[in-house]
Length: 579
Image (tube, rainbow, N blue to C red; front, side, top):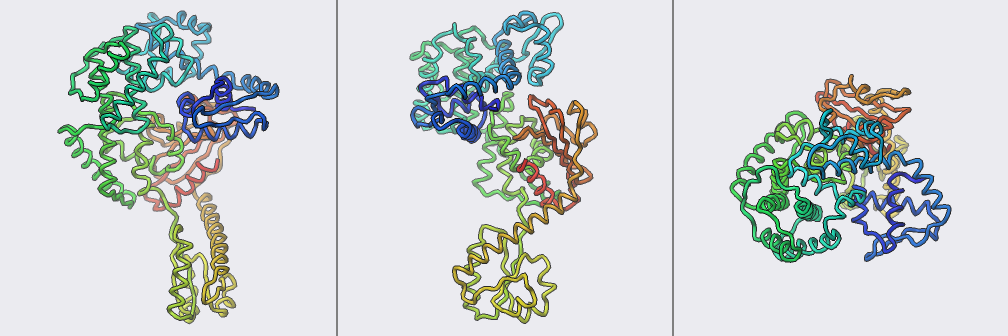
């Protein structure tokens, strides 16, 4: 059977006879480039050779033929995934209908829009955490999204054009495809003309906001709040003029100021406010680094370039926060899987010090700035080289051995035979392996590896092979020991339950705001507590949590006083990356 995501990808590609671009699939599925490519690779493994999805740099992905067997597979998969498919599509439809309503809409009218019964609509509202989060419900007036016009535009700029089922809401506006193409060309041309280089994601964010501004204006959704005037750049004025001249749309001063604010979020201009903000942020960074050093013994030492990039990122984030918006992050699951310790430190230490209350996507963007300083690395392993050879040959051999282990945490220790034999027990504590050129060493230590005094290629290959084996054995033994120490017996939950009820006895702090849902429908919750332990829950009936059906939940609690930070998070990372 096809997964829900594979079903969507195959349906989109099959319906586009002229091909479909990777960027479009990423946007419509709200996922990363890597995920789309992996899903298409998986689809091609399921399809016959005559039905392979092909890629062309100009056309994108295309599919020339679908057999009757594959069509049957699509229909069967759709039936199995129908509830999830309909639920996701319906959630977006509800949000968009409400965002294009001027006031409250009754449950009855909304149900009629969706061709649903009121009871079915009510069940869907109860089940979707996203709808419960956004929608205000009045028993007398009905439903609405209680946001300002600016909040609605920010939300639509991020989500609206990611779902094609909502496009009918604009059909009577104007020729949308023509406007989208011309507006893209205008923004692209003027960004290049003014040397205003930003990331691709930042460019798309501004383009979407400008497009939404035009759309909302044409439908008479005007600002209901005061938009404060700000200095308008020459670039924004030229975009403003081009929209009026080439597209025929007139924007108000409030539209101009709101678009300029969005532009400022992409590439912050040099102002006194920026300098003041940088001074505050720099002091907060110093405080954070000192706190982490005191609590964990971890040193964060950014160079000048790293600090400059971080402070610029934080200044932009502050501006986004002031405007109550966040930036989409399709890599957040991968980041959270890869850097569990940093993610937890950012949530529990960084956010309070920087006085931030931000979305998970924004947290994930901050994590990589600190991961190289905070994430556990494997401990350095000692390898003994025992030889009575001449200093020049020993030097040559060590140079060759260090070359093959330079990407590993290996420290080569050199001793003459007499010294090793006299203090063997002491030297072999915390030693990974012994390499020697002396036969008597082998007699007394059968696990030592004998090599030539003048290292040849076959000796080096033998050392690499033996070293790999020792490392694997050491890592496995260490992980098994740490798993026995930290991982509690898995709790099998057989009955249908609410996840919040399961977690109520766990000491997790603000887990509902900063929890992580990982690939493979795994929930990960973490906190710093008084005892280091990891509890795993497996559910016979997957539990619904934030639109995800979780089959497993991992709760990781770490005690700072344990002084086993490195080893604890090696276990956590293994649990997150192997399931």
